[in-house]
Length: 196
Image (cartoon, rainbow, N blue to C red; front, side):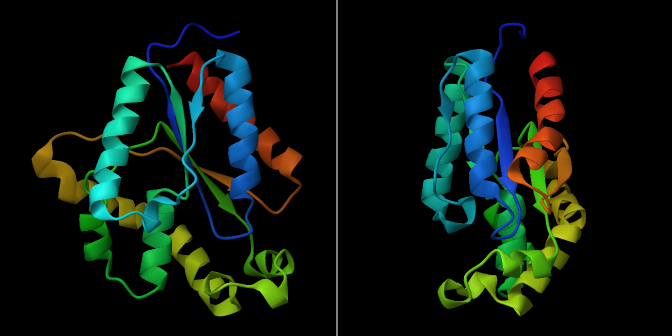
């Protein structure tokens, strides 16, 4: 269906808890595998949870497999989530920028958006984690709205070290069924596959 890939693509799935990141990661993984016939690497650990040394190992591994093996990568809760979650917990933006200086710029980032009330409805009150309280979700959603400003600071900090591509963020309405969410994602994936 699409021309043979010269390299693997890197896609990030970001957004607050209960926005549907897990199911969309799974759907996209199956779709890309169907289109390319190639393996899809999708680490389960969120980027923000990795220590600095583990991030460096992950970055190098991703560079190797995308260039040498044409393996595509789906990153779950990548650096947009890192900015949103860590800042919501009180970490200054400048420190988050430092922690993400060497992060890979994805070919596409899908940012799943849903109102706080919808996210709360999707969670079990008896099983809610600290990241699923109303106040924290409000702060998260505000940080995701401000993500362009945070990434601009990251880009400015990177300028002395060379030219980095601008991250392409596609905001997706996650306040709908998972099939409808993927319906909105799929055209962007098809465009990327045709132009990679």
